[in-house]
Figure 1 (cartoon, helix red, strand yellow):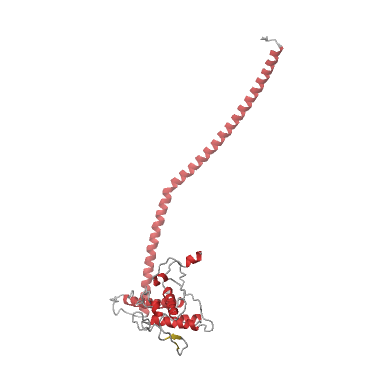
Figure 2: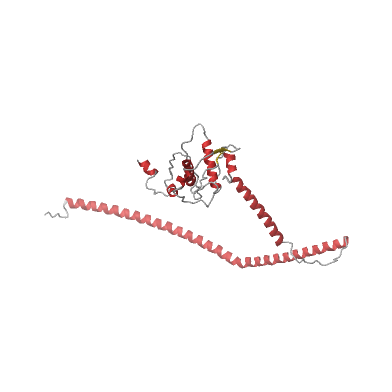
Length: 310
C-alpha cells in the first residue's frame, strides 16, 4: 500500500486535470443553461402570441354576441314585412280577378240562370264498367294464355299427330281398358295354342286375324271381348307384314315412362305368337320394376340379371 503526499507529482497532475475538467463542466453547464433560457423565452413569446389571438377571438365573439339582438330584431322586421307583402299580393290578385269579371260583364253581359248541381253518382269510379272490363280482359288473357300454351306444348295428344310428325307408318292403336285382368290365368297360353288362325287382308292393306281366340270355350275366349284385344291382333298382324321376305325374330317393347303398359303388350303379343305355333322367349329387361313374372304368375327367382352375371 502506497500513500502519496500532496506534493507528489502524480497527485499534482491529477489535481491539474481535475481543475481543467471543472472549468469545462462549468462552461458546458452555462451553455446548457443559456439554451434552456432561450427555449423558455421562445415558449413564453409563443404563449403570449396565442394569448393575444385568443383575446382577439374573444373580442370578435363578444361583438357578434352584442349584434345578435340587432340581427334578431331585423329578422323579425323582415318576417313582418314579408307577411304584409303577401297580404298585399293576395289583395291585389283578388282585385284583379274582380276587375276582370267586371270588364267581362261590361263587354259581354251575362247572368247566372241556374245554380250548379252535383250529380247523384260520381263519374269515376264506375264499378259495373270496371267489373265488365276486368271480365273481358281476363277472358282475353286466359284465351291468349291457353293458345300460347297449346302452341308451345310439344306433347302428342292423338295418334294422328304422332303419325303426321314422325312420318312413319302407325302399326296400331291400343286403347286403355280398365276391365283387362292384371294377372291373367295360367291356362290362357294352352287354350291359345289350340286356336285355328286365318289371315285376311283389309282394304287398307293392314293385316287382321279374323277368328283368333274363337275357341268354343267361353272362359278363355278373347276375340269379341273389347277393342284392346282386337287392337292387339291388328298390331301383331302389322308387325308380321313389316318385312314379309325376312321374318322378324326379335322385337323390343318399350315406353317413355313407367306404367304405360309395355309389359302387358309384350306379354299378350308373346301369347298371340305362341298361339301361332311359334316358339317365343319373353325377356323382361326392366331390372328395377319387373312385371312379366306377375303377369305370368311365376316366381322371380331366375331372370335376366342372373343370365348377365353368368
